[in-house]
Length: 156
Image 1 (cartoon, rainbow, N blue to C red):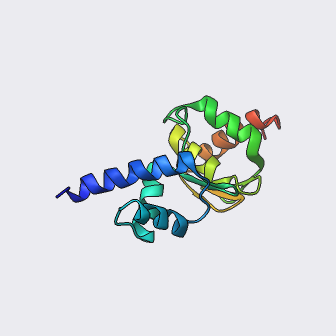
Image 2 (cartoon, rainbow, N blue to C red):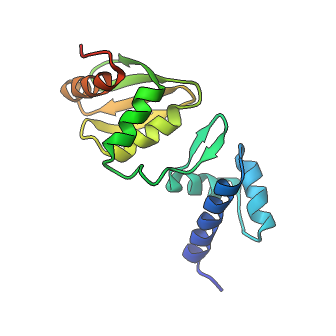
Image 3 (cartoon, rainbow, N blue to C red):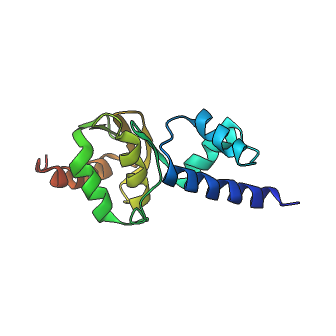
């Protein structure tokens, strides 16, 4: 009998294959597809798997990270910033509110997490808004400068 870790790894491989083949917009749909393939899947296990796989939920459905979204890949991050970020608003010394195109916040947040910029402590995203935590005001200013340079808005 396979171990729990082996079962989890097999389920995650199946999730990746399903997301490559099909457009899946709900976790319940993914759970059903996994069960149909013989996997023991629940909404909570699938939710954890999606998070650990770095899957982003877009308006068009779940999307696996691209191969070039590896930690430290600034080019991917800057492309997403230029394409999807609409506005930056500091909110106190430790928080930056990032407005994105509708449905793009999670994808941008995952990318910002992966590039591991030292200014970023963590992110929390919704549908079109990201809260980016910074260690302090100086880090927030550096992050705003870095992001605005790539938005073509200059620095402030």
